[in-house]
Image (tube, rainbow, N blue to C red; front, side):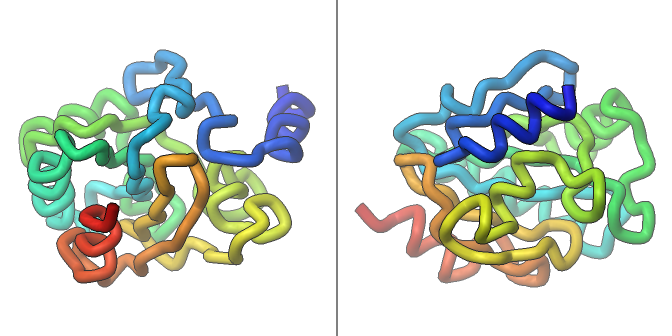
Length: 171
């Protein structure tokens, strides 16, 4: 399995080359997002930035009909701020923030067990664009309609920051 992940990562040219597990454990093919701008966010339920879920959902609701989607990846890499199971995370997001954008299974976004999709998002040797190591929970990666990484926004910057809104609204 690990060998397959590395082989897939080595040949990954775009976000669309990845298949991940959604929060319910089903395969989610990132190729299903072709033609959309994708905001990939590592999330956590017990972080000072957790209230960003509210703005992420509002951003998604505002722009989802304009070929925009948010994909959340829970991660427990920073001060163990996402300790729950996938079922607990889903319940938390639904009850507290009415999250409707796609949520994936909990993964590692830093370290030796970093998920292949996050290696692609953060390592220039893989994505051919930039290094962008995840600084904390709620770092936001912008991927264009062709599945290409175009930039990222640090965790402190809120979902409705100028960088993200201008990116979504540009033709």
